[in-house]
Length: 162
Image (cartoon, rainbow, N blue to C red; front, side, top):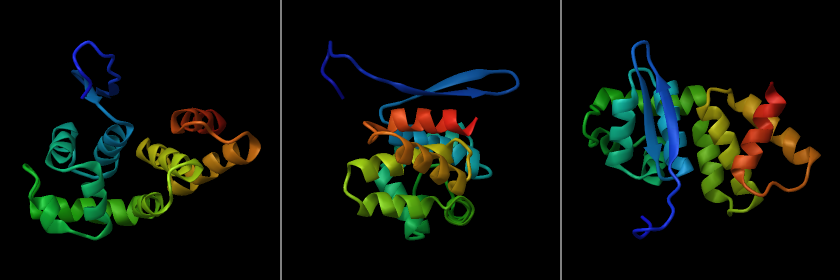
């Protein structure tokens, strides 16, 4: 965390329900993307459990647990039982194809490939299919200069998908 008096950037997720609207704040894009991925792609996971996951382990630890099918690590998180942990692994591995992106992101050095992987994962967490996300990001990277950051690439990809 920054020192007192320094500027802080808080990333938010606006969650709308029938009777309420709630803002959730995150320190990093990775935390926000994981939260969105959990609440949109895993049945039975709402904002409360999404926050519990982020409080229970780091984003990298969570990714490793999903990639390696480590149910015991996930079930140690407060509020997650064995069945919910198994469902998280099953739904993120099989339905979304996120593990391939996470594995590639881990293996690739940061730079253009890291930015591309971040953008693809962010689009997946917003509800797009992996193939659509990859196609949109590749369309942008093929047609323009090298992306300077993942935020710009995500925005451009979203505009191209409209």
